Image (cartoon, helix red, strand yellow):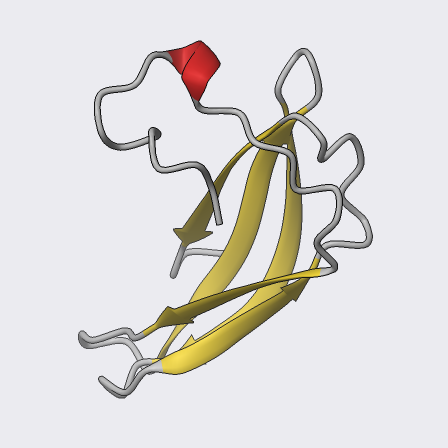
Amino acid sequence: MGNGTQESGGGFNARPVDLSNYDIATIRMKATGADSSVFVQFYMQTGSGFSYQAVNWGSLPVDGLYHDVVVPLAGIITSDVSDRSLACNPGL
């Protein structure tokens, strides 16, 4: 998902992408460490003011195995101008 410039030195105005035609975001991820699980929250910056919008996904097991995190995007508005990211926060 994305246009490839976010992490490759592109300027801010080169990063936004149109994600309005996507129903879900699927991210394959794994977690390792001492905790039994890590809370996963998907967030995007959207619209002309790049407001944060988040979808709480749930707990990912800390088992060192890859899992598909499938996030419904129905609640995200103005996703035609998006800068997106994913956060995991064991403290949530």
